[in-house]
Length: 102
Image (tube, rainbow, N blue to C red; front, side, top):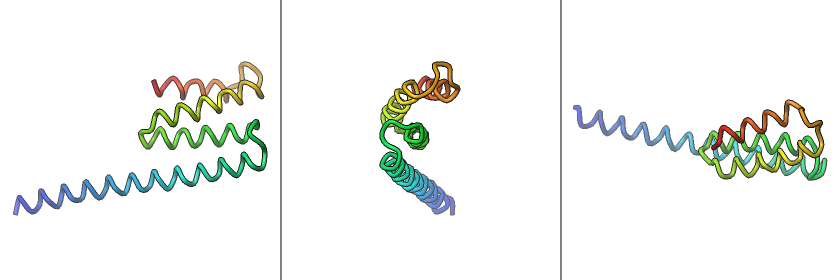
């Protein structure tokens, strides 16, 4: 009947939302681990660490966590500005990603 169908539809939507949250949580965990390993191997002030921070920031952005994403992108940009030429495309892209959060 219509009531049962509506309940099933609502339940499906909740399950889909839970799955998406779990997927984002696992992805954030993976990228956080990669970022920590890279930082241990290459140091806090490396381009690989900056790249990992950008990747982790994008995962947080997709998971609707703009504050965390902004913190990570800001840290990555500081590294990029320290290690790359002033007009490097990677730094420009990070600046663009920061701008899209606000």
